[in-house]
Image (cartoon, rainbow, N blue to C red; front, side, top):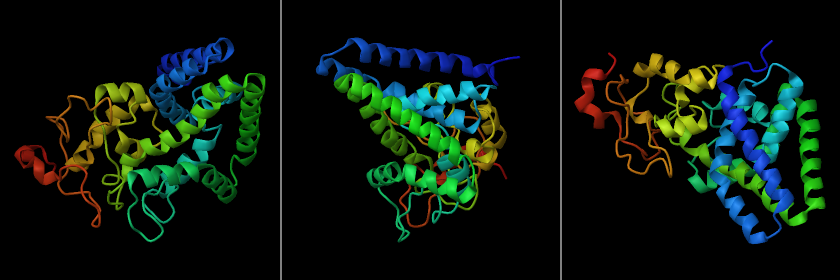
Length: 304
């Protein structure tokens, strides 16, 4: 019987495991704090990609065997600060269920007074409240609370043991990156939905159709498709996006952040891709990308 549910997961898991092995080697053999800080900084971008694949795994588990999945989640937790079933609760059972209602969305970009948050405020609030909201979803749904608590405690025990054995390497190789990546994950999700209308799946998300970005994040740029069918494996999101592109307005496409946006000037659907008419920017928000009117020269591609 195959070990992986989807063969496309083999290479990402191998690369992420090698990165973790490098973390363990640096922790074990490097004592100089400056070198440990350099390793911490160099690891931010790669571990951002790990955050994306941790997200994918907790939507659709990588392995067929639960024990292997728990082992993978331990590794992911020590790399990203998001422990086993954390994404399942906060994201799959929380955000995906509630993202069209900014009063209840676990990753809401509106304040309680209904005003839009800034990018910095959103990142701090969503990062700081992440585990409280995971707990709230677990209590509300009655699902996965035991696994979440046990695996979370085990991850913390391992992290504490690493710090106790080698304090400075333990902090700089594991604990500090775990905290950083928790808030990095929150920051990275801001552009997914902030400022968008919430009337349907087709207007509530931004998409990033950049090849390099989608290789590194496992097609996370196909975000409308991901919310439209959250159970679809990441490797199939591009095809799903193509099948629904005619329902997605032109201003649901954005450029990726640094470093992917270097040299990329065009914002909008790729040439030849159909799109729907209209703007998806919420009435009280400034558009962060051109509206569909900016693509009038492409009117022949608009789905009628």
